[in-house]
Image (cartoon, rainbow, N blue to C red; front, side, top):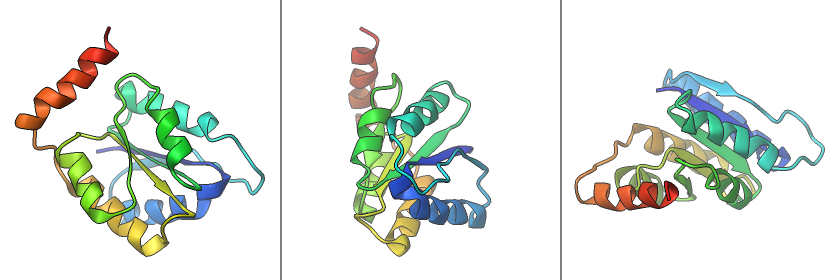
Length: 146
């Protein structure tokens, strides 16, 4: 598994926490920033990261902004992306098992580093169940291909 990490100015601290968890789990990743304190536009980071997941260059992505909402909306505009905004452990597990999410979005202003670390651990270690969920995920892909 290879992961791409990105954040806007509102998610830099939590992005660094996510990177530390990936280091601990020995999961390779590329961190594309931002490394700035001034305001930047979340689509400038979410869209390139999502495109690189959709292309197959990366298996998954983790995107962080102040709320996670902007990153989630942006990433989900990219064909083939199933970005999930997650702020609890149940959703982290369910979105992998049931939705085969390939991008995790979180908000630094919503959750703290301890919970974020557990969400990352749960999300990267949970497999997609397929089965009854495959038809539902397939309907999303069908719609995207119209």
